[in-house]
Length: 237
Image (tube, rainbow, N blue to C red):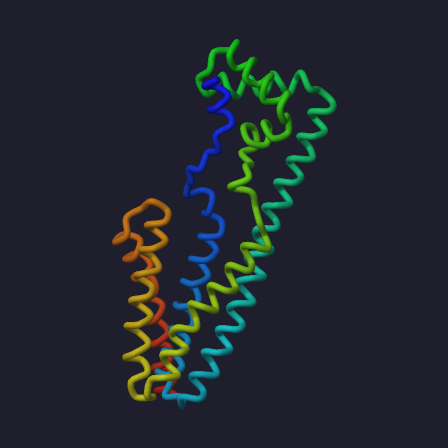
Protein backbone atom coordinates (compact mmCIF):
# COMPACT_ATOMS: atom_id res chain seq x y z
CA UNK A 1 0.00 0.00 0.00
CA UNK A 2 2.84 2.38 0.88
CA UNK A 3 4.58 1.63 -2.42
CA UNK A 4 1.34 2.33 -4.29
CA UNK A 5 0.94 5.69 -2.55
CA UNK A 6 4.55 6.52 -3.35
CA UNK A 7 4.08 5.74 -7.04
CA UNK A 8 0.77 7.54 -7.36
CA UNK A 9 1.80 10.71 -5.53
CA UNK A 10 2.60 13.57 -7.89
CA UNK A 11 6.11 14.90 -7.57
CA UNK A 12 5.95 18.69 -7.42
CA UNK A 13 9.61 19.46 -6.85
CA UNK A 14 10.99 22.02 -9.27
CA UNK A 15 14.55 22.14 -10.56
CA UNK A 16 16.51 24.97 -12.14
CA UNK A 17 17.34 22.85 -15.19
CA UNK A 18 13.65 22.85 -16.15
CA UNK A 19 13.80 26.54 -17.04
CA UNK A 20 17.45 26.93 -17.99
CA UNK A 21 16.82 27.00 -21.77
CA UNK A 22 14.30 29.84 -21.67
CA UNK A 23 16.22 31.63 -18.94
CA UNK A 24 19.46 31.50 -20.90
CA UNK A 25 17.82 32.94 -24.02
CA UNK A 26 15.98 35.64 -22.06
CA UNK A 27 19.05 36.76 -20.10
CA UNK A 28 21.26 36.74 -23.19
CA UNK A 29 18.70 38.72 -25.17
CA UNK A 30 18.06 41.36 -22.50
CA UNK A 31 21.77 41.74 -21.77
CA UNK A 32 22.60 42.20 -25.45
CA UNK A 33 19.69 44.60 -25.90
CA UNK A 34 20.87 46.87 -23.10
CA UNK A 35 24.57 46.75 -23.94
CA UNK A 36 24.31 47.10 -27.72
CA UNK A 37 21.63 49.80 -27.75
CA UNK A 38 23.12 51.85 -24.91
CA UNK A 39 26.55 51.61 -26.52
CA UNK A 40 25.13 52.63 -29.89
CA UNK A 41 23.35 55.62 -28.37
CA UNK A 42 26.46 56.69 -26.47
CA UNK A 43 28.70 56.29 -29.50
CA UNK A 44 26.45 58.28 -31.82
CA UNK A 45 25.91 60.95 -29.17
CA UNK A 46 29.66 61.23 -28.61
CA UNK A 47 30.08 62.03 -32.31
CA UNK A 48 28.08 65.25 -31.70
CA UNK A 49 25.08 63.95 -33.65
CA UNK A 50 21.70 65.53 -33.05
CA UNK A 51 19.12 63.86 -30.85
CA UNK A 52 16.95 62.68 -33.80
CA UNK A 53 19.96 60.87 -35.29
CA UNK A 54 20.72 59.25 -31.95
CA UNK A 55 17.14 58.04 -31.52
CA UNK A 56 16.91 56.73 -35.09
CA UNK A 57 20.17 54.84 -34.61
CA UNK A 58 18.90 53.40 -31.33
CA UNK A 59 15.57 52.34 -32.81
CA UNK A 60 17.26 50.75 -35.81
CA UNK A 61 19.58 48.91 -33.45
CA UNK A 62 16.63 47.63 -31.43
CA UNK A 63 14.77 46.25 -34.45
CA UNK A 64 17.83 44.81 -36.17
CA UNK A 65 19.17 43.33 -32.96
CA UNK A 66 15.87 41.66 -32.01
CA UNK A 67 15.53 40.07 -35.43
CA UNK A 68 19.18 39.00 -35.45
CA UNK A 69 18.90 37.45 -31.99
CA UNK A 70 15.75 35.56 -32.93
CA UNK A 71 17.21 34.22 -36.16
CA UNK A 72 20.54 33.30 -34.61
CA UNK A 73 19.00 31.58 -31.62
CA UNK A 74 16.50 29.71 -33.78
CA UNK A 75 19.18 28.40 -36.14
CA UNK A 76 21.50 27.47 -33.29
CA UNK A 77 18.92 25.66 -31.18
CA UNK A 78 17.35 24.04 -34.25
CA UNK A 79 20.74 22.54 -35.10
CA UNK A 80 20.80 21.04 -31.60
CA UNK A 81 17.26 19.72 -32.09
CA UNK A 82 18.22 18.18 -35.43
CA UNK A 83 21.15 16.40 -33.79
CA UNK A 84 18.94 15.11 -30.98
CA UNK A 85 16.32 13.86 -33.43
CA UNK A 86 18.95 12.12 -35.54
CA UNK A 87 20.34 10.38 -32.46
CA UNK A 88 16.87 9.29 -31.41
CA UNK A 89 16.12 7.88 -34.87
CA UNK A 90 19.37 5.93 -34.82
CA UNK A 91 18.52 4.63 -31.35
CA UNK A 92 15.11 3.48 -32.61
CA UNK A 93 16.79 1.49 -35.39
CA UNK A 94 19.26 -0.07 -32.99
CA UNK A 95 16.49 -1.08 -30.61
CA UNK A 96 14.55 -2.69 -33.45
CA UNK A 97 17.62 -4.54 -34.74
CA UNK A 98 19.17 -5.72 -31.45
CA UNK A 99 17.02 -5.18 -28.38
CA UNK A 100 19.08 -7.57 -26.25
CA UNK A 101 22.32 -5.83 -27.16
CA UNK A 102 20.79 -2.46 -26.30
CA UNK A 103 19.60 -3.85 -22.98
CA UNK A 104 23.14 -5.00 -22.17
CA UNK A 105 24.47 -1.59 -23.18
CA UNK A 106 22.04 0.14 -20.83
CA UNK A 107 22.93 -2.24 -18.01
CA UNK A 108 26.59 -1.46 -18.61
CA UNK A 109 25.88 2.23 -18.17
CA UNK A 110 24.26 1.55 -14.80
CA UNK A 111 27.20 -0.63 -13.74
CA UNK A 112 29.59 2.21 -14.58
CA UNK A 113 27.49 4.44 -12.31
CA UNK A 114 27.87 2.12 -9.34
CA UNK A 115 25.13 -0.54 -9.53
CA UNK A 116 25.85 -4.24 -9.11
CA UNK A 117 25.64 -6.11 -12.47
CA UNK A 118 22.57 -8.10 -11.43
CA UNK A 119 20.72 -5.02 -10.22
CA UNK A 120 21.82 -3.05 -13.27
CA UNK A 121 20.37 -5.73 -15.55
CA UNK A 122 17.13 -5.74 -13.59
CA UNK A 123 16.85 -1.95 -13.80
CA UNK A 124 17.55 -2.05 -17.54
CA UNK A 125 14.90 -4.76 -18.03
CA UNK A 126 12.22 -2.79 -16.19
CA UNK A 127 13.02 0.59 -17.76
CA UNK A 128 13.08 -0.83 -21.27
CA UNK A 129 9.83 -2.67 -20.66
CA UNK A 130 8.27 0.65 -19.68
CA UNK A 131 9.79 2.87 -22.43
CA UNK A 132 12.94 1.62 -24.11
CA UNK A 133 13.58 4.70 -26.21
CA UNK A 134 13.11 7.09 -23.30
CA UNK A 135 15.50 5.06 -21.16
CA UNK A 136 18.23 5.17 -23.81
CA UNK A 137 17.56 8.82 -24.62
CA UNK A 138 17.98 9.78 -20.98
CA UNK A 139 20.81 7.50 -19.86
CA UNK A 140 22.78 6.94 -23.07
CA UNK A 141 22.23 10.17 -25.00
CA UNK A 142 21.57 12.57 -22.12
CA UNK A 143 18.32 13.86 -23.66
CA UNK A 144 15.46 14.63 -21.27
CA UNK A 145 12.25 16.64 -21.45
CA UNK A 146 13.80 19.39 -19.32
CA UNK A 147 16.91 19.81 -21.48
CA UNK A 148 15.49 19.11 -24.96
CA UNK A 149 16.08 21.81 -27.55
CA UNK A 150 13.11 24.12 -28.28
CA UNK A 151 14.06 26.37 -31.21
CA UNK A 152 10.88 28.45 -31.46
CA UNK A 153 10.76 29.10 -27.73
CA UNK A 154 14.39 30.18 -27.72
CA UNK A 155 13.87 32.51 -30.70
CA UNK A 156 10.82 34.20 -29.18
CA UNK A 157 12.49 34.59 -25.80
CA UNK A 158 15.57 36.11 -27.42
CA UNK A 159 13.68 38.60 -29.59
CA UNK A 160 11.31 39.77 -26.87
CA UNK A 161 13.99 40.01 -24.21
CA UNK A 162 16.35 41.88 -26.55
CA UNK A 163 13.64 44.39 -27.43
CA UNK A 164 12.74 44.82 -23.75
CA UNK A 165 16.36 45.38 -22.80
CA UNK A 166 17.03 47.72 -25.70
CA UNK A 167 13.88 49.71 -24.97
CA UNK A 168 15.22 50.93 -21.62
CA UNK A 169 18.22 52.97 -22.84
CA UNK A 170 16.23 54.06 -25.89
CA UNK A 171 13.42 55.44 -23.73
CA UNK A 172 15.95 57.07 -21.42
CA UNK A 173 17.59 58.77 -24.39
CA UNK A 174 14.23 59.92 -25.75
CA UNK A 175 13.24 61.51 -22.45
CA UNK A 176 16.61 63.06 -21.61
CA UNK A 177 17.75 66.44 -22.94
CA UNK A 178 20.49 66.12 -25.52
CA UNK A 179 23.20 67.62 -23.29
CA UNK A 180 22.50 65.05 -20.52
CA UNK A 181 21.76 62.03 -22.71
CA UNK A 182 24.97 60.13 -21.99
CA UNK A 183 24.93 61.03 -18.30
CA UNK A 184 21.43 59.55 -17.97
CA UNK A 185 21.68 56.53 -20.28
CA UNK A 186 24.95 55.21 -18.83
CA UNK A 187 23.99 54.83 -15.14
CA UNK A 188 20.51 53.52 -15.92
CA UNK A 189 21.93 50.91 -18.27
CA UNK A 190 24.68 49.86 -15.88
CA UNK A 191 22.29 49.50 -12.96
CA UNK A 192 19.96 47.36 -15.04
CA UNK A 193 22.86 45.23 -16.25
CA UNK A 194 23.92 44.60 -12.67
CA UNK A 195 20.37 43.69 -11.65
CA UNK A 196 20.01 41.42 -14.68
CA UNK A 197 23.29 39.66 -14.00
CA UNK A 198 22.39 39.22 -10.34
CA UNK A 199 18.95 37.85 -11.18
CA UNK A 200 20.39 35.36 -13.68
CA UNK A 201 23.00 34.22 -11.17
CA UNK A 202 20.39 33.84 -8.43
CA UNK A 203 18.07 31.86 -10.70
CA UNK A 204 20.96 29.57 -11.60
CA UNK A 205 21.98 29.08 -7.98
CA UNK A 206 25.14 31.23 -8.09
CA UNK A 207 26.14 34.35 -6.17
CA UNK A 208 24.26 37.56 -6.95
CA UNK A 209 27.19 39.93 -6.56
CA UNK A 210 29.58 37.93 -8.71
CA UNK A 211 26.99 37.49 -11.48
CA UNK A 212 26.02 41.17 -11.39
CA UNK A 213 29.63 42.39 -11.40
CA UNK A 214 30.51 40.15 -14.32
CA UNK A 215 27.78 41.60 -16.53
CA UNK A 216 28.44 45.12 -15.28
CA UNK A 217 32.12 44.96 -16.22
CA UNK A 218 31.56 43.89 -19.80
CA UNK A 219 28.69 46.32 -20.28
CA UNK A 220 30.80 49.22 -19.03
CA UNK A 221 33.70 48.12 -21.24
CA UNK A 222 31.47 48.10 -24.34
CA UNK A 223 30.07 51.55 -23.55
CA UNK A 224 33.50 53.09 -22.97
CA UNK A 225 34.78 51.58 -26.22
CA UNK A 226 31.91 52.90 -28.34
CA UNK A 227 32.04 56.30 -26.64
CA UNK A 228 35.77 56.55 -27.47
CA UNK A 229 35.15 55.60 -31.09
CA UNK A 230 32.25 58.02 -31.43
CA UNK A 231 34.24 60.84 -29.83
CA UNK A 232 37.24 60.19 -32.08
CA UNK A 233 35.08 60.12 -35.22
CA UNK A 234 33.22 63.27 -34.18
CA UNK A 235 36.49 65.09 -33.52
CA UNK A 236 37.92 64.25 -36.95
CA UNK A 237 34.83 64.79 -39.09
